[in-house]
Image (cartoon, rainbow, N blue to C red; front, side, top):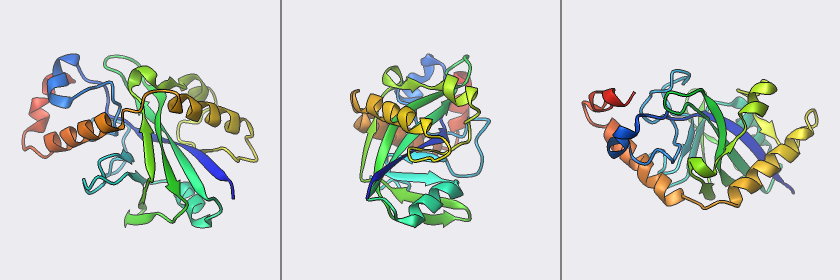
Length: 206
C-alpha cells in the first residue's frame, strides 16, 4: 500500500510583541492557538498538533474537527499517512499568512473521538521548523480558495495537489528539525494559560 500525504490547516497563536518573548517564549516557533487569541478559532479545543501531547504526556497528538480526515483514517487504505500542517498565522501587526511548518507521520489507524465531533490521533514521528525556514503558501491557498480545504496527494479531482504537497513536504525535510524547542514552548504556554491572571500578563503583548 502507498503512503498518503494530506495537508491540513490549523489556527496558530498570533504573533505578539517581541517585548513579550520572555513571557510567551520563542515566537519563531509557530504553535497552535494555545492562549485562545486567534479570532478565527472555532470550538473549545485547539485544533492542530499537540507536540507535548493532548494530556501533556509527551505523545505526538493531532486534534482535529474534520470529518474528512477521520474518513480517510477509517478506510485503512494506506500503510502510513503524512499529515502536513499549514498554520493560519498572523504575524504581529501584519496580514494573515498560510505557512507550512511541519508534519506528523502516522500509522493508518482510526482517530479517537475525544469530544462530540472532535478527534485525536497519535503521530509516530514529527518534524517542525521555525518561522524563518517555514514555507509561505498564502498565494496558493488564498488564490485557489483553499483556506478550509484538506488537500490530498492522491486527489483525483486535483492532481496538482500531489506536486504541491510533495514539494512542501520536501522543503520541511530539508530544514533543521526544531521539535524539541517546539515541545518546550508548548509546555511553557500551557503553564502560562494555567495561571489565574495569564490574560493580564499578555495584555501588553497584543
